[in-house]
Length: 110
Image (cartoon, rainbow, N blue to C red; front, side, top):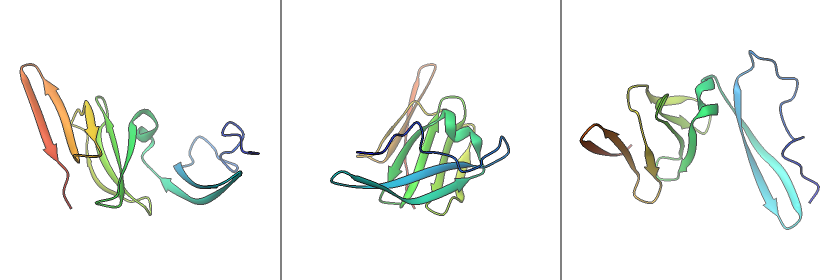
């Protein structure tokens, strides 16, 4: 495979450029970029990123930046910095948060 993720990257980006999610198609030994999704919120770089096919969106979670739902066109459909998410289950579509003596489970719906 002639793809190197360390050299594949930002075309003329600057510190003010939006973040991007790059979607690739892998077919045998060929790798091609399918889509670049620009996102203004730079906090996604320090968050865990998941894809939820039920809502056709990316889910970002962080115990410091909270939680976001990002559509495939890069729009932030939902963001809450106060939701300090410990884990997200793609299979169960649930957010898990702990706070002192409490465990909270949230289900993500449309």
